[in-house]
Image (cartoon, rainbow, N blue to C red; front, top):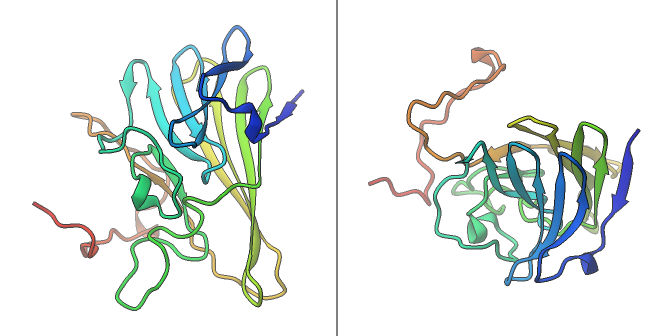
Length: 216
């Protein structure tokens, strides 16, 4: 059985408030000094902080006492339109109409419009073994693209991992481009191993360096 709680922006205050608790999970709502709403979700292994109305960014992720997020310059998330202006998160949804780093002939935002999208709705789904945070946003332009996007992130009972997902539906009468990337910013951990189940021949590693990156 799934229980769904619809969230409202008025639920989020400067002082953290425990919104839901059971033997395994604790859900706390708060608002950063910058005005960005946040959900802290804890299980017996760690915690996750999600920004439900700012592209459903996963801001923090800690399991078994290990902070999994890269070191960065941001002490808190900022209410911005482009991800580079609040680049202190663990993960975000990159895309959807365009993606990645703009080239010389591109005019799209870095990592697209979804990364910092102003979400229309946010909710929490609770089951016996998991808590899921969901949201939706409708993108529409006059004489342009029109879609609805529904990201989710889920934490499980007694587990030290999360699951992220994205549902997209084209609401216009014409074809639209779709360029999606789940962008993660992991901390460097010595001898850590990253695994994936995509065949090696299914992707190609970028070798060129984006214009905004200046290696030392």
